[in-house]
Length: 132
Ligand code: HEM
Image (cartoon, rainbow, N blue to C red; front, side, top):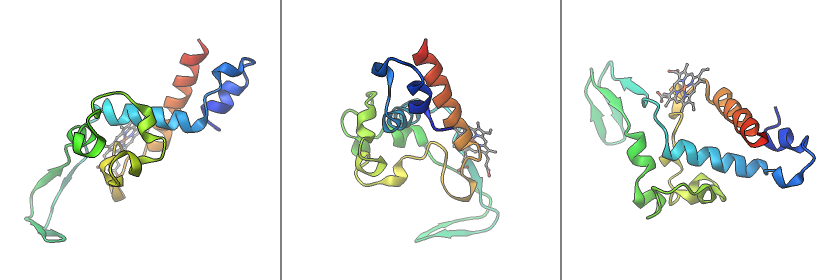
């Protein structure tokens, strides 16, 4: 699967060619603003240290993805607006250098296993929508 640009390039009218980078920007912005997935929840089975933070055993930990994805300090005063162009120079530039502020699929060893499958499905859906 070569992504939306290939799918649409089979269409004769070049007005509908959407660069692959733009597709990524659009999907990133959708995942940033409208993520309704329940954030991953992890559990400490023993006392756990993360730098200078000590978390006792038996704690459920989750991150407020939606709040972080909407934080004006990270994303700017237009954090609530749909602006795919904010991702034109990558995630880091869009989020004041805080690459880890964007985590629609979680992070680390328990990151979403279906991430690539989900993105591919979204690209196909977008292509079908645009074709019609
Ligand atoms: C846009 C769509 C999706 C989003 C936003 C999403 C998001 C997430 C998030 C936030 C987690 C938790 C990660 C963590 O605990 O740090 C997760 C886990 C997981 N996701 Fe997804 N997901 C999506 C689609 C899918 C699809 C399509 C599949 C399967 C085909 C899938 C399979 C899984 C599995 C198996 C896990 C558990 C991984 C583990 O605990 O090791 N996800 N997903």
